[in-house]
Length: 340
Ligand code: GLU
Image (cartoon, rainbow, N blue to C red; front, side, top):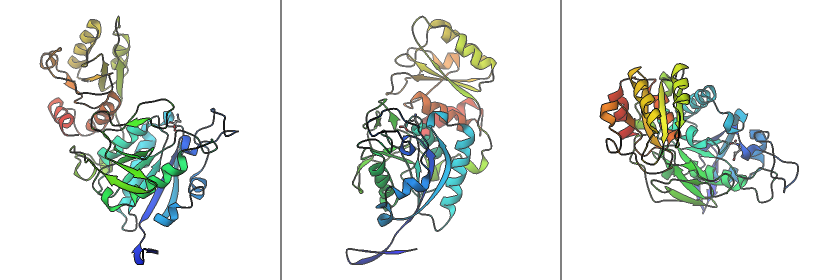
């Protein structure tokens, strides 16, 4: 472990591994003002070389896991990434992980890792909204801040974190809220955990839900993930999409319901039919925040539906995929929705 002289004290620098998966942070365009660009073309070595200041904070190693736009993320890369993170963090000489990732599905990957990697060490996801060649690109400072958060002792036992635009968010809460703004990540239900300003970390909140080291799920036991679909609700809906999903082997359905998780009558009927076929059906909301109230507008107990608590539908999908690797017992999965 290398030593650094800070304020007259000899301090050991933490060892941080940067795992690169792609995204805009690894994107490049032909000119600094061209908004169209290719995501996931810059390799991890160039990403690290572009921000030499991170070597003042930590000993850095890099590894390329994938190089994709995160809309191309899939279960196979998730499993590979989670196993890589798990293996690295079990090593005594690794103190934290930073994962560079596209912003589109960063929230899902963050929550997946939050559920399956058993560690108290920091895992930080980071991305950028402006590619590396853009004027005023946000990638370099975001990466600097992410390494600062991963290297900070206060980040232990906080679960997986998302660092973007000077903010620190919990994996369970973070969501992309704007297609292009630098200020796209928010935690609508709970607020951000803290801030990171040019590397200076301040925490104000902590998640009370189970994650990482206290999780019932473990990547060591997970070989594949089941199919879970999200069905988006709207007025004058049909049950076609839901029925097709069930016919094609969906093990669980998340309804992105209107308001408090509501479905058009024909869809409600198809949801009840799906439950009878053994499919787990979870009512979530397309509103983007708030918790779905059980047995109020819809008689969940009568139909056998679960509700998403206040997870957004994409995170409810992740929890279902992970939960179904352990059990298909509806009551147990209902408990998981209250705990995670
Ligand atoms: N769609 C791309 C992705 O998610 C670009 C978005 C981004 O990284 O900001 O990887």
